[in-house]
Length: 456
Ligand SMILES: [Zn+2]
Image (cartoon, rainbow, N blue to C red):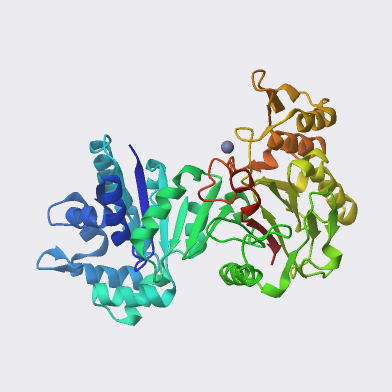
């Protein structure tokens, strides 16, 4: 049984979405606003406390006049906090009781203050809905029959998009979007959701962000998901114009300049390049490059992936980044080690300041190889203490399963990275090939996900 918490600003569409999702899960809806209204009726403890705190002038025919109360809390600083405190005490308790009562059922919790009340801790998944300011205002005016000015006032004290992205498992930008489709999309994405990532969906554009990197305001990053395809330099799953179009959508979403993209010609080398204003796609200077480093804000690093391992490195002290394409060949040639060493050499970075994030990749559940490839790995890494965990041979088939992620982690540790600074999202691209491009699954027709890393 699952509990899914749904939240977002006023006018983001969370109530409609809650109903749609509840249908799909045959779930009970716990509506925080409804519970709050119930408890604010005359004679209830919550009612008494509100009257005591805000005075009798908020009453109309002895019931709380919500418009008057709203006026007070949205116009006077500190008043909203007072109401939130009371809400926390009485409404959160009532919601927890409802959750307990329905614990044998799927639950959709529709609540504006999901994170502020810490009721997210009762949820298996959290979804935030977001929309542009003007969209929210339009919806609020129609729904609540209020003026544009009042809607703006209410939104002013609500949390911004960053707050929701940092806290949620899944975010839907709800502009002209079909919420039925969004609900299906969320269900499809559920298997990859965990507390290391958030998935953001804006129309056709869907991407992962890593919670650890979101902590740094000056870092821009993402890992894109299907259906968008960013193509590759050696196979052509889509036309060049289509790739350009997709990059432009990506740039719009992440608020970066298309002209700043640095996209090398990846050829499974272990070559690392310090970018020196070589922006653009597949230019001569970017040939045979599988890792990029920079400290410039106008160079947005982009590498593409279909099962190979993306590694995002960020020096927290010096604000320097590296993006690494570590396919099985790159891993066998220790490309991540080269990237760390280049950062040390070129920018005097210290290993203990570096954060390393490992994105979605083929993992040992799916990376099955023949003896020749196994031998390459064995020869290179037999010195590693956990080599027996890294290479697992199936005696019956003669095939081996290789844990390339573990090799990369060992290489990071060997080069001074602190284990608490290695963040692995634990997602296998082949296990989830319905939402990520996978070479193992689609061969040379496979599309490409792109990893983006940049500084602002
Ligand atoms: Zn797998």
